[in-house]
Length: 322
Ligand code: UFG
Image (cartoon, rainbow, N blue to C red; front, top):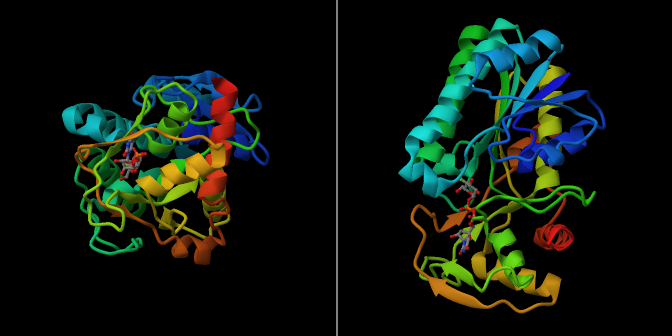
């Protein structure tokens, strides 16, 4: 049985929907940002907190867990700057509790959700896993801290792990059952689509004076189901002992500017957006584009869905829940 911590959240619930096809799954989530109805009905759902040893032990005592996938984290960059305690407490301290209980129950396979924010402002065009990691906010710091803890635990306690550094997750499941539903919503693609559905007055483009061809920030958008499939490949690599420790980027390898994303949304939806140019948002690097060559070579995974497919799936989801 696989324990998915944070399996009611956006990325976790998409992973669970894929994982239940081949494995028995138990989800532990405190529903602080997730939604119980997003958890696939084939999975067992337990409401509980990863920072609470009693909740964790109840799960490990009652179910034969062979691996843990950990999605339960706060992930708003801006909030992490104004409230770092919340980030270090949940993303680092609570994760330590989870790892401690895992080791106590001799569960040694761990998949960890990390982020492009570990790289900070990159000093290369295309980021690979050996690129400099120098986070510029507590969110990125908190994830890098856990990455370092995992390396120490692997050496000392024979923990086996895969770290997955996501670039910009977006899109919705092809099932039509789940999609991106943050409150508040801060992510570009859902904001554009909500605007195109008449739920927002306009779109603010955060800065058009970056050192990029059209002046707006460039990101690497990856479909959430592609992310889910990468997790399953990573899990298999631990369970079949192909990997003991590994760190992989997960992206499409292609960057799109904010303006290009808006253009693609207009094309997919056939609607016209009302845009204003606003100030830069603090902590935004001009360009974040991944090389995912390492995981392609090691595990044969690559992103299958391009930006148009990502937006098309998100558009169907947003229309269905409006
Ligand atoms: N943007 C706008 N207007 C908006 C919202 C976003 O112009 O209303 C811009 C942002 O400034 C950025 C781009 O659109 O340039 C993408 O922004 P998102 O908020 O969608 O995503 P981020 O790149 O900021 O964040 C993502 C993840 C974080 C992770 C980060 C790594 O959501 O968890 O990548 O840098 F930390």
